[in-house]
Image (cartoon, rainbow, N blue to C red):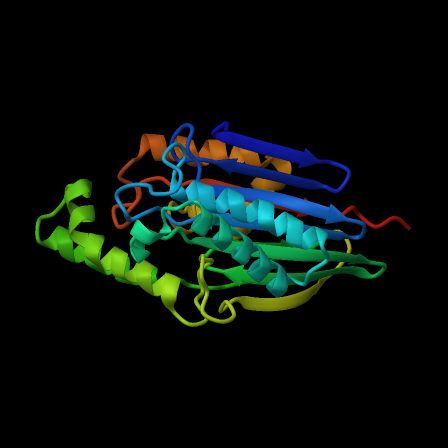
Length: 301
């Protein structure tokens, strides 16, 4: 699979991009499914494995296996006409059956089970505008821009674990542990314990293989006027705003609309290549980055 995946659907004003932080390996997925007057925008951000090895897919990695399998299963569920919550659970069950069939589940520790963040925006077109329905697990970002240029964060979720990780990194740096590999090794017990919690908690807010009951998803619905646009993205893409400070949400929207998603990724990677120390309080100095941009046609009078 190419490290740079792009798809354009100009008739529906949809553009998607998904890029890996390193060549030939990407644990994100971004795409859309269009049926009549309904467009489904889906962003998946696979969580980097803390296992130290792969158990299911030795060639492509367990996280990539999980994300791509889930995207295929979700497409089937959407095609069947399921509501968002039902579709996510049906897709997770399909992937869990494949996980068991892969034969590695018995030897795989729970901290090695793959998980992901998911943001799904279902857009229903109407005569007076558009109805947006959100289903979100994890920390992807969804922005809405109206025709007058106002930008709104539709899912203003702050991941509390980010603060925990940054505090631990700062503590280790204060101890003199500045080497990233040594720091990661010291943090691994904490990271693995967190991964077990995400995979086993009741109503977990992570997309996982075996949820206990319903996923703890954040759901919301909004009415968007004609001429609106939606930009959904992984946290790796949103580093342009909240990590590197190169953009505001509004200027990021401007960049993506005026120059395209590929231009935004080019700016992201150029900045990371020029300043690897720009995010000293991050576990990863670069991340997979994916986004999908939906633009409603302007109304005709």
